[in-house]
Amino acid sequence: MEKKKKKHSKPVNQPSKSSWMLSIINRESCTLCSKLISSISIATNSIWILVWLVLSMVEEDVKDDVNLYLMRELKLVHLVDIFSILKGVHLSLIVVSFAVFICYMCCSNLYTFYIIQIVNLVVVVYNIFFFYYIISTGYIVWHLFLLSLPLLTVRFFYHYSVIIFLVVGLWSIISWYKFKHIPRNRCSGKLVYSLVVMLLFVSAIVSLIKIGCYSCNVRSSLPGKPGLTAHRGCPHSPMPENSLAAFRNAAEIQGVVTLESDVHLSHDGVLFLLHDPTLFRTTSFSKQCPQLSPNTIASTLSYYSGPCPLVNLTLLSGSEDSSSTGPAGPGASNGIPTLKDLLVIAKKNEKNVIFDLARPINKYSTFYVNYTLQAVLKSGINLKKVWWLEEHNRSRISAKYPGLTLAAKSSFTSFKQFQRNNISIANEHWSTTGDIIKRLQSLRMAINMYTIDSVILYEYAWCLGVDTVTTNNCQLLNNHIHNYLHEACHSILLATPWLLILIVALLCLSILTI
Image 1 (tube, rainbow, N blue to C red):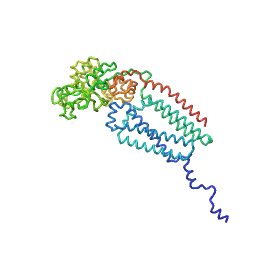
Image 2: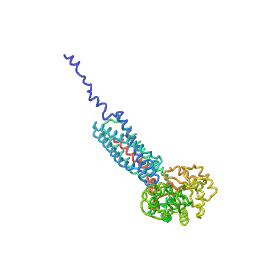
Image 3: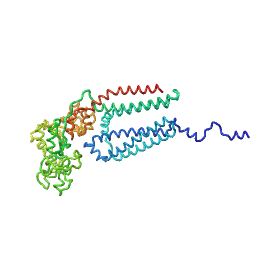
Image 4: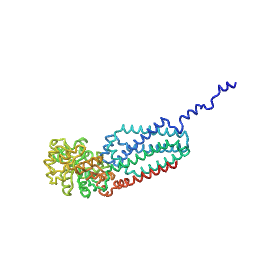
């Protein structure tokens, strides 16, 4: 009987099925699945932060021409609003995940381990859907991120510093709590692993800060303050865009050195100022000429005669979208001015002139460039004051009119053509990288950067050492005399070594106390 009992009795050391399952997944061992989820969560969160930098930059200067183009053409009109909501949800998930992780480390509860993985999984799924939304809605321009990185890194330097110290401090507390009862020889591997992860995290943030500062092209001494180019006469003023009142007002601002506009050629041979190809947005065309289509091209109409003379139309006062193609607000003003009127104002106030010349859809389409040049010569303005942007027959124009100041964009013109065609001004977009700016400056090119309306972008252009910036906010930028971006970069570069010393000291103190 005793033998049978021994035969059928269970061994004392044989674990039960439930205890065997619990031993596989416990708080000390991380399964491959949990590691994978955690890794994906960290990776997607990192990408999410980069996307946040880009959209924050768009949000910072949303009234800029290019950002409006980005919003419309890439169908991202409502993305910023949706993103602000998603940002709150995502940050809440991160806080919950971190709180549960702290609870797990302190309470040593197995169930919190499962909660961590569930929250991580939710964050991963959320990020995947968010990225899918971004991709399906449109593609984010890479150069926008390249610009947003240095600017936002500098602006949020102190936020990054607080994050570093919070994470390092919490790591120290958690490590001390977790390893204080474990022999040093048993916990050394895990301690080294966690220390390496912590150092990688700190190095990534510090590198981001350094890249941001150097991307701003900070010099030992701040370059001269850029002059201002009045974009369509600075429509942020009460006057309508491309109106004589706006240009006269801009010419009186001390910091404005150039007047910018867009020129069209009418059917009867009059050069007039208008940004859009049609008249619907900025003039009273729809009310005074209801018999014509709103999409009627302006150059097909006559300035002094015909069914809808352009001289009789009135300009509308600008709205929030006046710097781009959007609906203008009500309010009558003076009529559509001519290029001759603009040149008179520029000559009287000794200002430069730059304009985009539109190819007309009329009998002048084959010789509109020469026609415009003759009009400029007849005005009597100094040719050096005219920044000629038109690319058509540029080499011939350069040889025929050596006094004319030629301007071009580096995106459409090679560096060799700059020297070959005697181009002296580079008209660059604000997203142009610092390397290209340095290359142009090495060729002794004057640089005009467009279109900059916010103070932070103006300070960025100032740090780059550009000569002029095209803006709709002439009064605001003219009154801005301090470059806080340059000062912040210098402070950061000086503070970074001390920050690293404090971090290393804190980590060493943590290791010694464990």
